[in-house]
Length: 443
RNA sequence: GCCCCGGUAGUAUAGUCCGGCUUAGUAUACGGGCCUGUCGAGCCCGUGACCCGGGUUCAAAUCCCGGCCGGGGCGCCA
Image 1: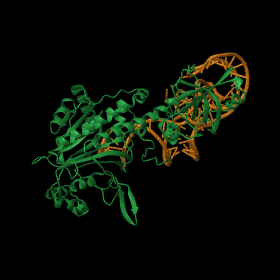
Image 2: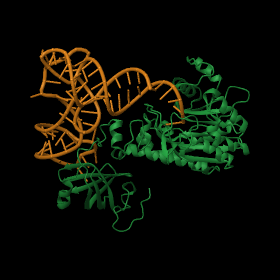
Image 3: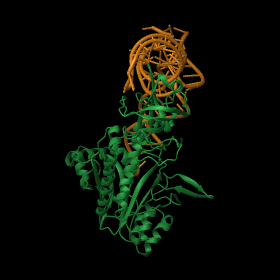
Image 4: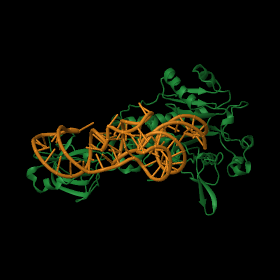
């Protein structure tokens, strides 16, 4: 990490992690007090910033400084000027003999969480005090890894001709119904927070943008009490035109996931080690399981799913272990979903009850859905009617398809879910700094 | 939306099944002391808690009912 070029008198000259004993003689560091130990002739103050941990060693003969340090407590915020010991005695790494110690902010004690690292607080308590919780290197690591993941995916998309766009979050109508939408007052009219940027991405295909992605939030007003749902989450939503069929979409998606994971592995060795995970860069192509054959596979696994029915959680998990065993893969696609369980805009497999509709499953968890969309005006209208929807409600969308639309498809990958799967997190709330769940709107 | 489980010091837990044997135990944090280049230091002392309301009972952290809060399973989904 490169330290900021600083002006004289600035709070810090170095990130702790940047200090190389022998190369850096003197440094000014700033951070939170991680531990205070009073031992004979010395007081040891551990100081942590986001890059690492330093020990500030104050000997009794330093008089005033020694006294000042006696009042320090956990998570006080301090700045220390000192000489870097060329051969540190401390095992934490960097050791400083201070010239000056400034206490910039006091932490009340006891803290509302155990920050010492031996007691793991309940997630709920941690989230109540999330800023303190995020000081823990482990949680910081999750945020960093997610940033690398998104960066890797963006790099892939940018270098393959995808244009980043921002589609609206406030919408006048839902894409599939309305039950799970958050309602917003829009100058006296009813508006909604989008549940997916889907339909607007399709309109951009009609517009000829050809290949796009939208990185942004979506909202679901589902009161789900599970470790894998958030009411607000981010997705990397991709749409591309001039495809032959949904297979082209899958090819992009697996490249995208692999590029994200690759970036994480390359860039976040330290963080991954801290979290105790070693993700594999997934092999391409990802295995594909298709309806209706999938019913037979499930039956062999001892699970009966009625013909034409959707997969349930148990089926997804069974298939995941099946894929792991037979393909040694954590990810797989499911293709040709029954048309009746999918929304109106999907492309049917001609003359069948199946759709060119694709889910990506990672470690048994649904990470995305997508596939090829129907681009022919008459067909879209027909399908809206088949689904028992009111065509007039979708005019704002459908009418644009009357004037020439390319074959296209896409998908939206849940970023928190992908993070969760790669890092083997038990709860999706770990994968976002301030999770929104049915009960939690603060902080 | 349906179902299951839980709520004890700042934090995390034991005790709850089978009411009394509890002055509610332990770890950590916090305050004090001893020792000591500590690195999860060690030792001694101390402060600190039964979610709220109602009921049963001689007696409730413990049993029952309601509320609030939290966790999970399913559904739905990313």
